[in-house]
Length: 166
Image 1: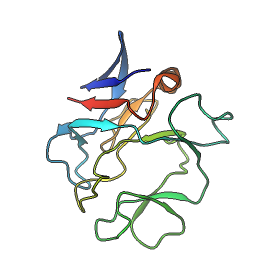
Image 2: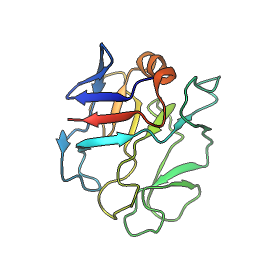
Image 3: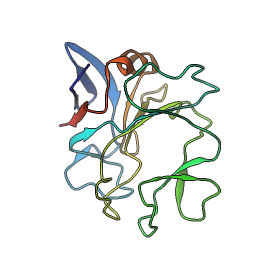
């Protein structure tokens, strides 16, 4: 099991291997805020693994808790709502991000333990390790890997694994 992954720019280091990754379009920041497009700097626990059962036909092999996504899954990104930075069920009246997407970015999602214990309104939400876009474009603040790379890493990840963003 990996106890630590390191994201340094556009590479993620796991053990003795480097993996290409994408980060936020605004780079890495210490003072992350909602909607700034930055990936937060720090060390974050992996909170579980969500997967789309229509695109990932078997539950991922991992020690992380796994959750099947459905069309009604979302994530609250409204700093004024009491469920800010939490998973929600759709329809949901407050601002939110749907987790069931047309593209493949959220076929596998690992929420990072950023701004979740405690949640501070406006400090950023929905910070995930997820799948990269085919063109490797920057994210809105997440860390993204190639599908094959994330599937390779998942069996070596556990709730004690830290993702350190430098």
